[in-house]
Amino acid sequence: MQPVATPAGRPPRNEDERALVAALRRGDEAAFVALVQSHGVSLQHVARTFVRDAAVAEEVVQETWLAVLNGIDRFEGRSSLKTWIFQILSNRARTRAVREGRSAPFSALLGDSGDDGATVDADRFRGEDHRWVGHWAAAPSDWSHLPEQTLLGRETLARVRDAIATLPPRQADVLVLRDVDGWEAEEVCEALGLSTGNQRILLHRARSKVRAALEHYLSEGATA
Amino acid sequence: MSTDVEHVTCRELVEILTDYLEGALDPAGRVEIERHIVICRGCSNYVEQMRSTIDLLGRIAADEPAEGQSDRLLEMFRQWQAARSDGG
Image (cartoon, rainbow over all chains, first blue to last red; front, side, top):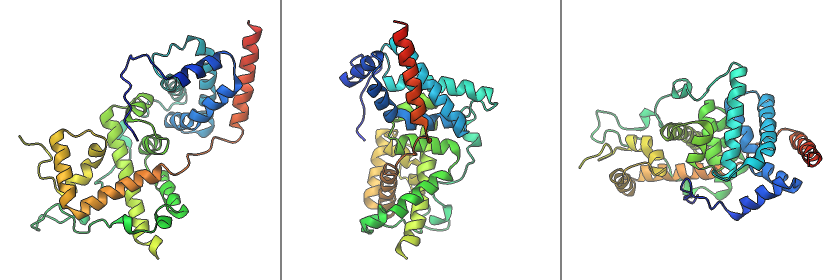
C-alpha cells in the first residue's frame, strides 16, 4: 500500500496505459480481455452499489464496456483510464437505479446504513467509577502468537467473508473496494460519489466489525 | 496548543484509529496516538489486530464474475470490432 502521487492535471500517464489505449483503438482483443480482467470484478462491485440486483448490475457493466469501446477514440487521457471507465459506469448505474426506482443510494448515506453504536463494545472499557475510565477492562489479545495457519487459514478467511456479508451494504461496498480490491481512497470517493469524510466513516465501521468478528472467532473457535 | 485527542483514552483511540491509519489526523493527533500505543499494550494489540484484519481482507479472492459474462463480453467486443472495420 504505497501512497500514490498523481496530482490532477499532470499528463504523463504511464506508458502501459497509453499502449493499452492504442491497442483498444486498433481493436486488439487481447487488450480488451486484459482490461476486463483488471477491472471487471470491481465494476461489478460498484454497479451493485447502485443496483442491488446482480443481473441488472451485470447489464450495466456490459453497457459500460460497450460505451468504453465506443468512446475510446475520444478518450484524451486527462484522467486515468480506470477513472474514466468508472465514471462511465457510475453515470450509467445511477441512471439505471433511477429507472428501477432505487435512486441515489449514497446520498442518504449514514442515516440508512443500519448503524450503529460504538466501534468496540462499551463494556470492554472501564466505566466512570474507575480511576482509569475509558481504558481497557478486557484488552484485545496479541494475534502475533497465533500459528500462521490459524490466522491465515481457510476457515479464518471464510469468517472474513461471512463478516462482510453481514455488513450494511454501503459499508461493504467501501470495504470491498478499498481492502479487497485495493483501491485508493480518492478512487472510491470518485466512483461512489462520496466525500472523503464519509468514505472514511464507512470504512471505519466496516473494518471495525470485521475485526470484531475475527476476534470473536480467534478467541474461541480457532483455538478449540 | 490542545487538540481533541490530547490524552486520548483507549475507548477514544479505537474510534479514531481509521483516521490515524488513513493519515487524516493532524500532526498533534498522530503523535498522541503513537504515544498512547507505545505505552498501552491493549491498544497496541488492537492496532495490530486491525492491521491483520486489513491484511486478511486483501487475501480473500474477490468474487468471480457471473457465469458466462466473459463470453458475453467477448461476443460484444467482436461485434464492435466488426462494425468498426466495416465503418472504415
